[in-house]
Image (cartoon, rainbow, N blue to C red; front, side, top):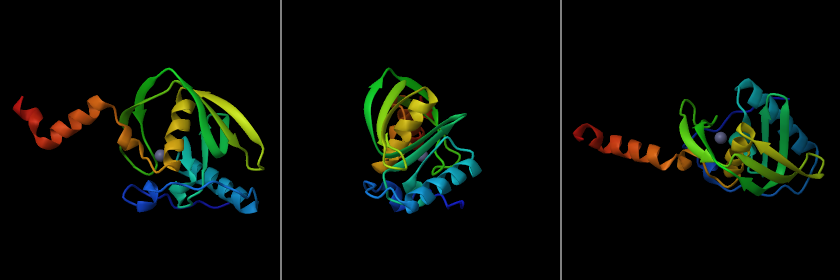
Length: 163
Ligand code: ZN
């Protein structure tokens, strides 16, 4: 296993759409193993393959004892909502309020090509959505709550001091 370099915001690869995985081979297993080691080293909850420079529809989410490896995932249902501070290993040091569903079910394949469905709640649901977005080239900073985005926009324009 090896720790891979995490791509940071501004790297054009992060806005690209990842491709479906067709081969559930040793190369995929090494990628997943390396992603686990990289996630652990960086103390994160989730990591998408694109964040280590691989444009494949693969992500992992590790929260306490709950480990998910998702290949070619789809979000098949989402319920409720939650708003909480969210961060990303590709956007170091920045945390914003992002609204996400409270409960999310994904359908995906494991590293051997077996289909499964899994429901996550709370932080796991949030991470499923966050990592899924990475596969479509979307960073969480594009999903800040409207209120927060307006505050930031106002600060940038210097309007807050005038009020
Ligand atoms: Zn992220």
